[in-house]
Image: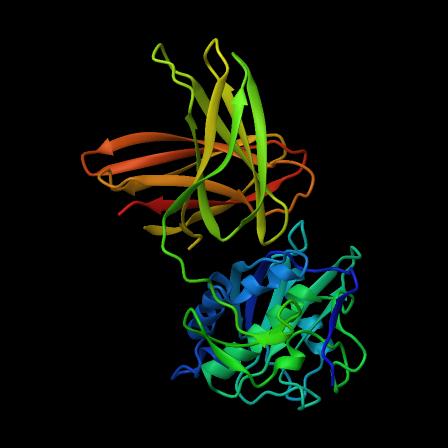
Amino acid sequence: MTINFTDHNGAVIQFVRAYLIFWGSAWTSSPPPTPTTAQVTDAVSRMLSGGYFTGLSQYRGIGQGYILGTATVTSSNPPNGFTDSNVSTFIKGLISAGTIPNLDADNQTLYIVFMPKGVNASNSNFIGEHTYYTDSSNRRVHFGWITNNGTLSSVSIITSHEIAESMTDPEGSSILGDAGTCSGSGWCEIGDVCQGTTGTVNGASVQSYWSQSNKACKIFDYPAQTYPFVGTQFTGTVAANSSHRWFTFNWLAWQQVFWTVMPTSIDPSGAQLSCSVAVQRTSGAFITYWITVTNLSNAPVTFEGRYEVLGRWQ
Amino acid sequence: MQTGIQFRGTVPANQTHRWFTFNWNPAQHVIWTIVPISINTAAPEINWSVAVQRTSNTAVTYWISITNTTGSNVDIEARYAIFP
């Protein structure tokens, strides 16, 4: 079987805002369940802030994300043999009641519903899934559900699979395997062809996903790098008493970058340059910096535009 | 180098919003950078400036003004880096 994935140009989630929902009274039982809501939340936070999702940048510049919030709902319990419809109805009800926030303006929200241990889907072959429903404002609400065998590693691995696929293909219209790539039914996505290959990133158990650029299942992490590191990105000249703006693109969004300018023209009489920086998030994974350099003197000034990469984002 | 995210928020279209964060150690060298979370493929979205207040011998408050230069709301992330 030849594995190949193609972008069909549908929706993607560029920078996920994960809302974690723990459904059922079992999540607050005494003694607490294994895993606990706190353990699951910590695992998801680790996979989002770690380097696991950095490999998604190859797919239209998709980035990472963060946990928007969590909710534990004990007023109802998921039925054993639940369906996608049960889950979407549950989410609709929570949004309607104001228990969880409605979609953000950019529709980057992903609602993830965690089931209590032993509660399975109607098709017990599925241990996790992601899909969407269309709300009354005709917006597509992206959600997933995760079953629970009582181990944190399993819940975490399934979650990593579903988030990666939700970001790259939330509606079955974007990063999809070509015919013959997957043997199973349903949307053929980047996690489906890599099941069984797992690892640990930033302390969270994760599953590999397909890297089309590597033509392999991979578990991504941040590259080894010592911080801070510095360099000169560009050189230029600003005319006397004027400003000029430069831009530089495809900077990694997970790195913290600071910009300075250094005159290379000598002027012992007074201040020569000031600079200001504007920032543009062109995709989840990449940033463009716009650097305006102002010449405060009466003569042209040559300079170096210097970067200082201070570290990772968190 | 210790780095992190201090807060996330939203700056309304074509407006400036100021946040403050307090009880920072004045002995530490702290650099603030702001990045948008909202995607915009057309134009730069934000710029920022930092004001500093020494509230005591042992505490500093940073006031971070973030300007949205676009016609849409922009979600932002404020990041700090503390030099060792």
